[in-house]
Length: 354
Image 1 (cartoon, helix red, strand yellow):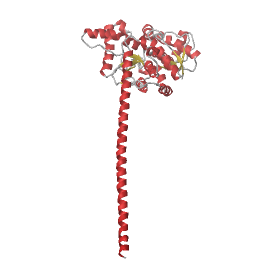
Image 2 (tube, rainbow, N blue to C red):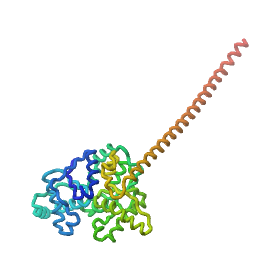
Image 3 (cartoon, one colour):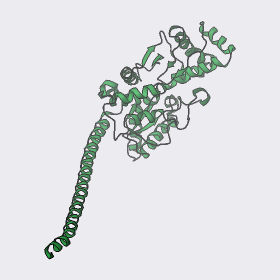
Image 4 (cartoon, helix red, strand yellow):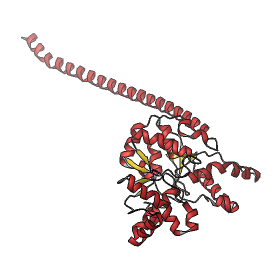
């Protein structure tokens, strides 16, 4: 399980806890992420707004370096925005020789678009990685109900991202179930959170975040789990602002922490919250985990009591059955003895008469 690794610009800034938790989990399960040397910003949506050629050339430069320095390795991009940019560049290059010639001319380097681009979810959802994750779980995150939020960049455009199910992807849900959490069924898995529009048109964009929290809460989720640094930043950082507006309208504030899926996997492996970056979240995220850990212990105790009671009842029933069998056997033995005695009485009477 070795991959070329494109960290992205948020890796050591707004997405630092994603990087920390990814490194922790990858090392535990034997996934080797080899960073692309001298990689550059992928341009995300800003490059596309500036120039279509720039939008495919910026990520292509890093992909070309990976192709040269790390031949044969697929490229992993943890950030959903980076993933879409790199994936779009690969799709463009594979469309025609003319496209590849254009890219090579712009970046002034060879590039054949040989490697595929994967999300971190795709890497951890392979059979080999899932087996390794299951083997490393020390404490299952029971009683924690999670709303798995994929966002829009990992699944759209559908013809580029090639997601199995654009509206209802399941990789993160399956991973959360694997570590004992309970994924809820909700309607906003792949809804857009507004991304950069939170800065340019906040009046229209902020309700997009609020609706995500509302739907998660309405479907019983304790928290939202994501795999995109920009989605995480929008949700985690702006929850306080949204709550302030809700309180001003006389509505209850949300208390829904947000986590990276890698953070929760790390916790299930036995890591402390600070080891996987949960201590640097904007919205308080530790209390829920402590409460659900306590709930899980209480549930386990109740289950142990229930099992003990079930075993007691089984033993009681078994004892009654054994007693009935013994009683039946005793009656059968007595009947046999009586029959044997009755059979010998005529002979005794005959002997007496003679």
